[in-house]
Amino acid sequence: MGNMDTRAILIFLGIGLLAGFLAGLVVGGGNILLYLVWGVIGSFVGGFLFAQLKIDLKLNPIVTQIITSTVGAIIVVLIARLIGG
Image (cartoon, rainbow, N blue to C red; front, side):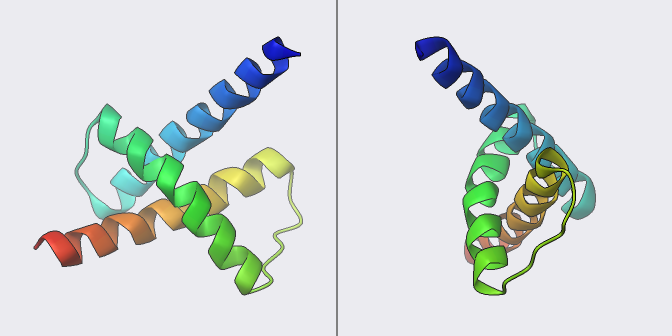
């Protein structure tokens, strides 16, 4: 049972890292730690946003999660830059 939890966490972090990297390509900048933070926070932001707007991409669940997390990460980066200057 603990093995599945570890695997799920690693998959979540991998998707977050990929989403953060893709967000970095779109908005520029970043490093591996920032990519991970952007992607993990972005997955929550994107998930909330897509749920509120009732957006269903009807794709493979992993692809859907990557897209959702990337959109969320882009939003997180843009808001952080607005706040941080």
